[in-house]
Image (cartoon, rainbow, N blue to C red; front, top):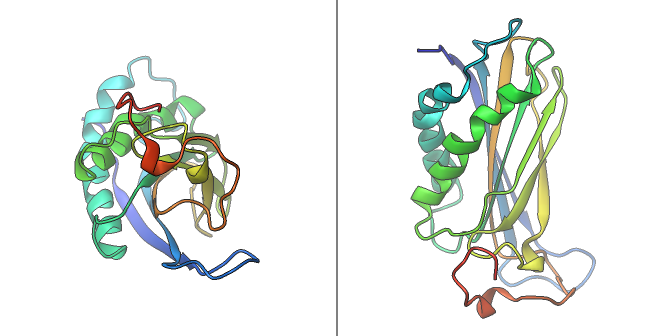
Length: 193
C-alpha cells in the first residue's frame, strides 16, 4: 500500500459580486481545496500505478466534504473540476492517480452529477500555480459554466510531493452571455446536453 502522507491542506473561497457589469444576485461563488501529499513514486519508475488510486479515495471524500462545508452546504453547487500537479521528482502520470479519487468523490457527494469532471495536470515546484477547470455537473455543454480557478501553495509541491485540487462553483460566470445550452435546459441526462 503506497503511503500518500498528507502534509497540509488549504481552502480558497471567493464570492464574485460583478465582473464590470451590474451586480450579480446572488453573487457567484467559487471554492477550491488543495492538499499536499507525499508522492510514493517520486524518483523512480513504477509500472503499476492504477491500484494506488484506491489509496487516495478517502482523501478525495474528505476534501470534498470539507469544501462543501466551507461553501455552506451542497445546495446550489452546480459546477466542479479537479487538478493535480507533481513535483519535479514525479512524472505527469502520477497526477493521473487523482482522476478517480477526486472526480468520483465529488460525484458521490453532489448527488446525480452526470458530466465528466474537467481536469488539468502538470509538473511544477513550490509556488507553481495550476488552473482547475470548471464545468457544469450535469451537462458538459453548458457554456456559462466554462471557467477555471487558479490555485497553488507557496511551499509545494516539493520534488517528492503531489498537489491535489478540487474546485466547485455555484452558478455560471457572472454576466455569461455566449448562448448555447442553458442550465435550465438540460434534458438529455447523458452528461453532455
